[in-house]
Image (cartoon, rainbow, N blue to C red):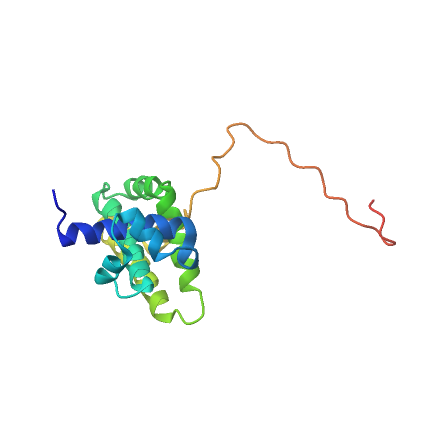
Length: 173
């Protein structure tokens, strides 16, 4: 069965999402995206005139996934928190959010930074409208931030030994 142009475009965006999440904007080639999507590089440029336009589409996909999760969650702060935490546990979502933030902070990326801010503000508005939460409660919801690199320890871990501090004369005490 032959894919429609819309289905191929979506395959390109999914591939770009995964590649950009893993390697970042500068570390990702359009050739790698095309290969992952199963299309030629010239065909990829039929959908997206530039690599940056493709990065924007991947970023928008990330925000749509977050909005969908919050939109389908129970309309309570607890329900939103669970949905937000579950999606943040998706490695590609977490990495894509980091890559989008890094790119938005780069010089000359004012328009992209505004796009990322708009994505977060739309999520804020969605959660607020669905839950009736106060700004402080919404701040607490989104302050959950990105998941830790490793799961927390189930048992307490001993504090590390103090770091030796050189005394006068360069000797550690």
